[in-house]
Image (cartoon, rainbow, N blue to C red; front, top):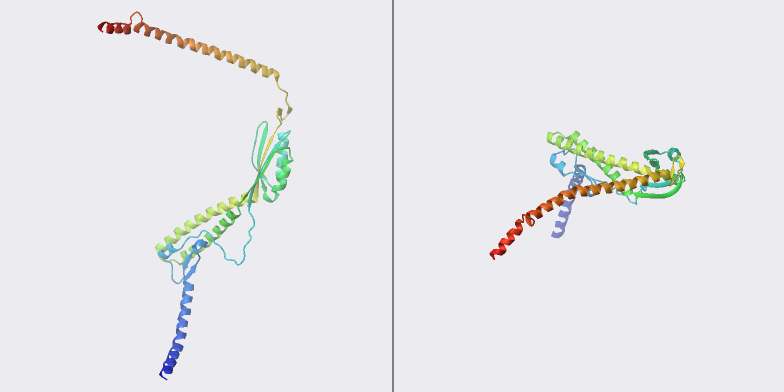
Length: 306
């Protein structure tokens, strides 16, 4: 009977305290959910405190600056492939002026534009930007503007780079908006200065990323084609040119005259510079072993002493 009385007493106490404990747990879970908003730093997000808790410089230093966001989805998400395509076409033509006119019409027909061009008396080089959707057709027609010498197509897959940069931009934008909210709520001077510094840093990163995205998107949307046109050998814009025998003969005579002229100057150089050298050698011999013979007399004295 005593054991039964103890058991009944414990049950009555548990019924009294359980509701109060459950209410406390619910209140704590709600306060924690309102106090923190966590994004995993490795997946590109930040941890923040609740609005009621305010903003402090210590808590600001604990907030991570993300680089990317990886959305959690149940199924695999498919992305459109992003390619940067470039082409090179080398052709031989009969007229550079006609080729230039044909190239301008060809570019306009595909909705492109000429980005760079250069021309010499025998060759023409043009760089054009064509919408990527028209790249294959444009390359086929470019090959037919003359006698095809060389054709090359290159494709660079930047799908991962494009979507990674897109995610980084979205993450930076979220981070910027959150810092702007902190700035509106901050009341201390140190907190305001700290948040403004972080806003300037994130804004600079965001502008740099957007610039990279614009350049990358331009390369993806518009493909680059280099066209090189040249005239056949021994041909100018006016037509075929026969070898000029008279000018070649004059050139030959000029080369022969130049050879003998150079030979004459070599002989003169030898004559001019060899005379002083011979004179110096004669004087040296005259002083050492000749009539004066200083060295010869020295050796004779040495031999007499021995």
